Image (cartoon, helix red, strand yellow):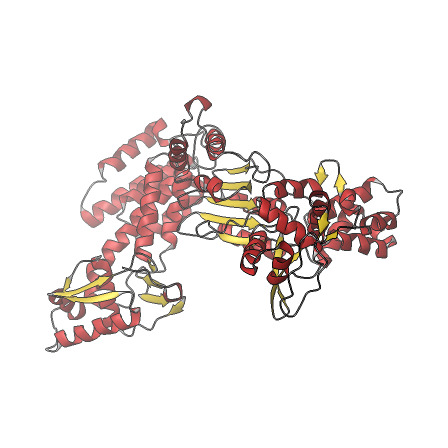
Length: 629
């Protein structure tokens, strides 16, 4: 069955008042009886619900004569409200509800999925993960289950659902106790016992929490209270488990202590989780919206792993933005934070198998036990991170083929990827394409780097420096560093040097920071036709370039020229802008200077500088005029 369209996606809630939402907007389900039919069909889980069963759930032992007709009416109403992608099918002797594979969320199924994962984590000895996932499961509940349905259905199903909730709650409390949170859970346990006095599991957890908090006498008193309540209400002695716990309290048995006292904050024993993030730039400036968007994307609850890409031209500040966001959300990933340089823009990108080898070693796999093949490493890696809450910062990715084996496959973990490539073939990530800084943010960054007093003393020169850097953070960092390194130079001297096109790029080099080097490494990764298109683009003026003008300069047809320009835009060498009633392709000013230098060196001759036309211009033969600078 086809998936529900995004704008028609449904959320169906049973764990609280019966509700339905389509595209985030509430659906009016009507009164108790259509809600009861919907709930009964959902609880049946693809089983045909006979008319006789629906009749009993709707009216109990006193159904009306017209019950069959009314059931048909309620089923039709549910069918109409849920939309065409959800089938309410008449299947004698009753009705069957069929859901698409995607596009419909049911809170009960979400709860059960989280509960099963949390229980497995608790059994597997990872109480930190268990506590987090079980809290997610319990957070799905919005109140008493099946609110607003007819009494017969509530009487039949509500206690069973409440038992599932309480079992999950007891498991979460067990995880908290394993994590040493005994003092924190005591008030919660007391309140729960007051509401559920016959649940011996809660009684045992309270006794354990009190003992671990140094309150042995209170723990023994809690046992006596449990024994008295059970005798009065049921005429029974406490269960064998509770009696064994009482004996352990009397003797101070070691079994009362957590299973490990050397557990890390993640619930895992052994070495601490990796904390590999490099420091974020202390002078990071601006980008508030992008940081907020990344932080929200990496901390929101998603059904699967969070994957987000930050893409842009060389020197635009992708890594800085990723590190700022990663440090802000680091506490959300207690199982570790890993930074891995994939070297994608250089001549020797990291092979996925080698990257996985590094990741596996960081995750505790001894070097001699790392699997050999790429497929084996992928399987071992996914097994290793399953159930963990891990943040991966995958820096400078070459492309999708390198990246796919490294992405987490299960919920809880996240990958924050930076790349000069667009990564448009990657399946379903959040995307943050990063452009140059605003003029105000660029000036603020330069002021931080060069010094406020220098900028205040020469505001015109400072404006010239900032203008020459054209909003590129790397260029601003180099210019600010040069100004700080030479305090005896007036800023006007730097501004004048940067204003000369033939020396602008040479001035934007400081120690190991070089805009030219960054552009060179990216340029070498372009195919020859794209390099040629970039070189000739730089000669055709600073205005946005229309595809037919590029076709004339390149000696090719407009479709092929547009493909080349679109490819450069996808790789962030130029940007697409509205121009002359259509759209054109515009180079960043510093990229244009770089490309013109490559043109002079590699072509020797260039096309005539063309004005940007309103209509297609006649073709101009490439190489007609020698470049004069």
